[in-house]
Figure 1: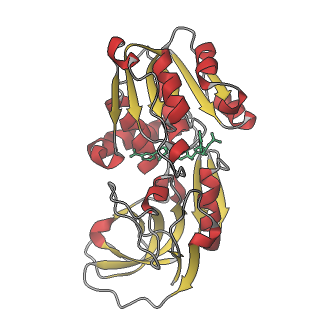
Figure 2: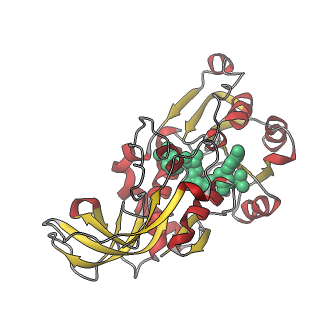
Figure 3: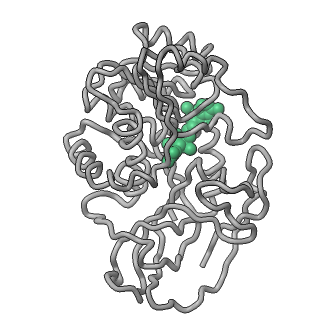
Length: 329
Ligand code: NDP
């Protein structure tokens, strides 16, 4: 099998040198396992945290071993009940062309209903993150004004569109380029701005003159501080990610205006999508309808070739993607 290994742990920004391609012989399948030929894999911001040797909600990647992460592929050999050769599955052993996967770590998907990459994005973990974070963590309700950062990314673009589909009165997004801002307006966002164009707090106040009720935070830092400043009474913040600080080598300052959370009676709640698996079925049913009737569109940036996975991952951290960044294998 051809695999991408972690050659060294990045300090600050990752570089191509932190990764190495390896060809390895795979052992025979054991009972309960399947062999999967991967079609497409995901690169995700959370993987940056796993490259550090620190305890977190998912264990760190091991040095000189393949990285892993979401992937969709086809079963080419099966010693697990319920899986036959030819089945398409989503599983957690990406970053390699051939993967040995335990049967209980794979779920079947229907490639006639949606393309393989959709199960890594709109119909997969990304979509569940957006839906659970908005509806459950941030207790979204009809009429809310919603602000989402990282809005042209995989999770963010879905958050904004789901909020519109569920009756938000106004949805505002921030993103890192004029092209991304234009795309957000096409997707139905009521307002969008490029966070490079000036202080986020100022741009947000202009885009949301009556304040915001929900902030879906993908970025942290200056964005979180700006959102706290614009929050209405009883506002809710879903703390999903803080990508602005994933490559920092120094502790980053807290929002300097956190004290406002008291008087405004705000809720700030962090979450991990894995804790919201119970919402997956409800979410998939709704998303399937939204995609079918065109209420929600989903962008992808596709990088071709497993050997380009490290550069796709680094590109993701730099904002080279619009929608979900995936790598075809
Ligand atoms: P995205 O598709 O949003 O890709 C990452 C984007 O982050 C880039 O495209 C870039 O867009 C933006 N970005 C990078 N650096 C900065 C910065 N300094 N300031 C502002 N934006 C920046 O990735 P995902 O949709 O997969 O993930 C979005 C967030 O959600 C991440 O923080 C991730 O960790 C988190 N997440 C959390 C989960 C959970 O369970 N809590 C599950 C899944 C994701 P731009 O050009 O706009 O800068």
